[in-house]
Length: 165
Image (cartoon, rainbow, N blue to C red; front, side, top):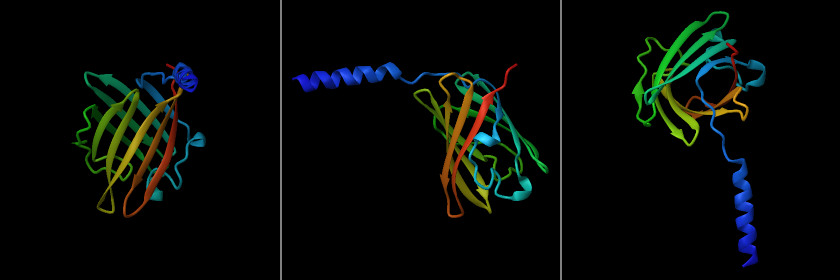
């Protein structure tokens, strides 16, 4: 009986550090030095991305995102509306680059946003899963991106800090 009581004590002590939920809403600035993107966010070196501004805003049962990508030869804006039902929907982007999604499906897992993004690379569809993790203090956002395709494996970490208004 004592081992069972000890186990209950350990379990209840573990819940003291339960997940805290921070809103994603706001403006986020990309930190390249803290990120891990391998050869880059774009497969084509000409489309190298050096700066990203990400704006996130929650609206009725959805999240609106605006990604502003900048680089020596890139100035692109991609806007997505994420419905939290896990259903794939086209993004309506015209002429998307390989780092932009042609379709998305999003859902919440507890306080964590999970986005399945669908891109095109050499005419083949590539699926990535983005897991949004906000730091305990709410000032840092890490997007863990993973995907596999016949062309490439994507395993990246994009780190952002909350922009001070």
